[in-house]
Amino acid sequence: MQRPVSPSGSVVSDSMDGAVKIAAGASQDPGLSASESARAGAGAGADDGSLASSADSTGRPKVTKRTDYLSWDEYFMSLAFLSAMRSKDPSTQVGACIVDAHHRVVSIGYNGFVGGVSDDDLPWAREADNPLDTKYPYVVHAEVNAVLNRNAGSVRGCTMYVALFPCNECTKILIQSGISEVVYLSDKYHDTVPMIASRRMLDLAGVKTRQYIPKDKQLVINFGT
Ligand code: ZN
Image (cartoon, rainbow, N blue to C red; front, side, top):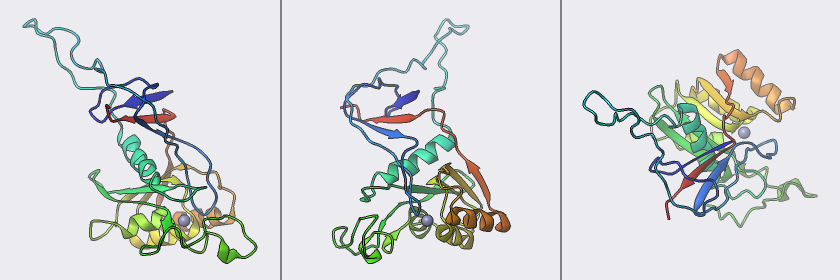
């Protein structure tokens, strides 16, 4: 089931054009990623029906708040997935979002090559005869970019939302920077060495981990065009 929502908050039909859909789940390769797919649809918004229902004592319709709003987890994980859509990686797109204890976004990041280098000057391949011709030596993971991109002095005590359980290299950075909780969506590489090492470090360091299970498969952003 999906829950299409326009920026203005109105619920729109799934089959509309001009909509960005953020889908949970997808293929990722170890080392990086999560996935999301964006597909265009079309459409115009419509009232979500949350305005008013029963009448009050004056006879006026009683206006109540929307009930179909995003939860914090949905909101922040969606931001991580939206950020992943900026990734140039053809096989794996991962996004991460860091929030503080007051539910304020402190940073966001996605996987990509180092800054100042053209995305066309390094290889994107996953496999090659020479390891230097693959992307792996050069890509910065979303989690690390998110830590480095922070707009606050520190991310100590913050929570990271990330599409894929972090690898051991990212986990070192997360622990050293003081991230206190990791909320992930996919754990598809649970039994690989990097993830086992990652869990070991997170457990020993007392960093909480929690898997986010989306209640909807997709979230649609409709620009109302
Ligand atoms: Zn990593």
